[in-house]
Length: 417
Ligand code: HGY
Ligand code: MN
Ligand code: MN
Image (cartoon, rainbow, N blue to C red; front, side, top):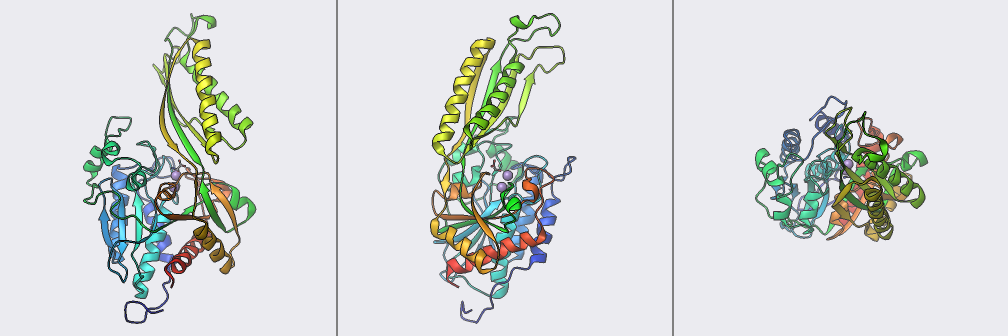
């Protein structure tokens, strides 16, 4: 393999280093629930960012950060510029009580591929970049995939910096507090291709005993915050027919959403957070605030689900005599990945004797944003039992190693090595 003058050897990923770094990063932000919690722009995520930035430097990469906190490790190509890059990315922020692989596997695998090029003395014809995007999970700040959304121009930087968490802290304040706001304008480095390696987080590969997921796209996402205002009253003296019970109304919405999913087939609905006020055992709740997460691979069906939810909220408000406000937090359309890149993933898996299957991602990913501006594809490896967003998330070392091998070979193929 020749590149940059002297002959270079073929890049080889050192699995032990990759698995060791996954383990080290997984130990940052350990929580009482047996997992780790590194919410976006928190002190624990800052610790993780510093670790990854150090590993990028140790690998001899140029480390740059943009003003929404997206972190980049850059291996310049023979052309010396930043244009026409091939980027490998994901995220290192987590949900609450998260597993060790969601996002981190993709970032550290990208770092492993760039390190393999450096150690082989292989100079790519154009820049190779590894990215860790800000606030992919969207648990602390909504929308999710915020860093990649801003990077691709999907949201103005100023608007993103003003987004507040439930304590009223803005993204801008949080970035300043951990010193992670960089000097680059978001979008300073938009690639020609984007690849993301990720654990499936669902049951398909594991159930069908396939080693590699050839991801054809990502389903649509719609998040809502619903506020129901009823009337506090005494739990022991208020007859049922005189109640305006925000708690009961919210429960009806939950049941409706389950029935909507079962009847609609591909639509998924989740009430992931709920708070009652005043929150006392003997007081009828005057207020319920909860979130709804709707997903469907078909944008039209997602819109249909949104309409059915709105109609049900109106009906419930009338019947229970409560006031219902709904705030639309996120709407990301389904995306279809680049046919040729998807084909390259499938052919690469086959060339390595790895069984594979095509599927659409149920989870959102930064790739869903990058697909707006460049050729994009994802590679999945199995999640044991389909579990994720849980401390029980697990993927075997063999599967983790197989995934990064496919990633490396796809990179070599795309770069024409
Ligand atoms: O919500 C999602 O699908 C992703 O984990 N952010
Ligand atoms: Mn993820
Ligand atoms: Mn996730």
